[in-house]
Length: 348
Image 1 (tube, rainbow, N blue to C red):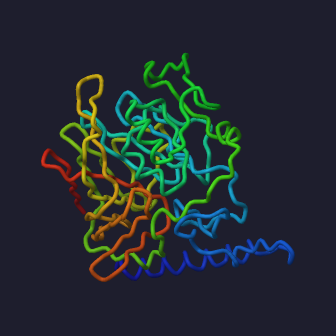
Image 2 (image 1 turned 30 degrees about the vertical axis):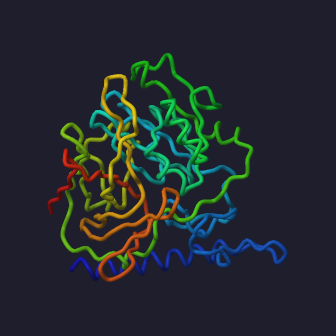
């Protein structure tokens, strides 16, 4: 069967399923306090709100009528061999990978529709996180930060919770990790400790149906090279229609299963300090414009992205107009455009 007709039929099925879910959700509501999802917008207002729309803002998938009582939680997770096994990735809504010092990467792992009891290993924050966190009105969970990073986060009004906060602690008896990589977060415990009324974020990506994706080339194997020592590999599984990170550090059975991989080429700046080993700390400048590749259904689609400010929503376009991302779980790669490295290759 040709790929394009199959995608169109899949999109129709998704649309029918979503419509059915909205009708079902509408049953049982009262006239005085309507709870019908049919009266709710399909995506959050651009600046967010207080009520959950008919779809989850981080996946675009159908959402329940009840609005979560907690904010989006973004946990910084180590992404080196020392972090193995990572916990909680399988329940994440979205994963953002960013470059840190020494050519390695770290994961900003987003949780909203599910809050696992064990996430980590939790590591430190970076100024790069500002552009990732602020559009979601999220809280950031980390083990610490450099003094200049605390100042930058405070200036950007980023709320964070560190080791010692409810549910964020070091497991001194952890047999799987060394001391530096033994901090984990219990997100339900942390959520119960947060008393402020959370803001429901705007849709993180411009979500659309399957039919909105028009791949231009087969792309089952993807290699995203951040540096000479760090390349993230993905393989598209025809049976599950998911992209799996083949060199993952995730615990067996707890891997993030991506419906799409979105690679954004970003500018890289200097955070203004060095790590204890003397490596300069880079800062991902997640605003401005750049090129992109969207991988979905074993194919690739090209376009451009724009983001006016760090806290602005992402706008995706192609030569033909606006670009939509099929609803689902997305792994976002913030891949620097530098002379020292940063490249992406794919094969059928």
